Image (cartoon, rainbow, N blue to C red):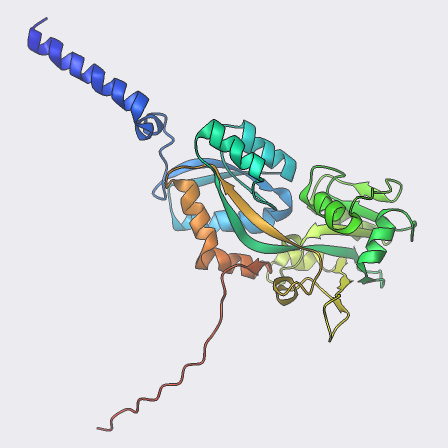
Length: 316
């Protein structure tokens, strides 16, 4: 081997060593994970109670940016958080809360950076009843008493699971406030769709689902569901005009409807990749319009301003 050939091989080896150990971008690229808005695939986990609206977000995003693929798995909020911590292939979760201080510190220690997170939209938990049931007015106190078995024990309260789901966690934190479900009146099914199906088949059932499953009158599937179930009214403690309100966009944004929660992303990405591109799509106009069309509360304000033009046109 000539000395010239030897030195060339040596320099190539040193270059490979530097790229592998010192340049994270080289490692990502060599593993096929160097994705961007121009193309690539990422895996995310999504709270199942937001499945309809997130599927629409993904569909529009992928059509707008050919070559990209968002592989979403829909599961309970607790399982989404497990994926974020334990699954190295998981890039992002979409759930009803951001990271706690302890969780943020954990990622700083393990990943050497903090995942980004923020609110994407405002969601509400809808109370639904059978379409033949005329009992459609609920107060928070009545819901609390029924969930704890103190009132109307002939009515079954239906959830998308008895633990681990964001809907159950919200009701435990915001309605029961330390009290426990009466399992004699509370029933668990496996998904939001099964909650709707159960209520549609049982006149004495009361269900709890995210508004994106049932609140969009522009979705033909949801319109068909609303022939079988009804969205109930819940008491508004801050309303001077109407004592009971439905989870409409205006009542969600103004918090007149009391069962309101946020929709958050948590992104485990320390460069501008496909995850960042998808987040920006959902945060800005096109994604926010999708949330608005799904009857969630958009975080971006949309308003039409009246403009007065004082300048007169010159006559010919």
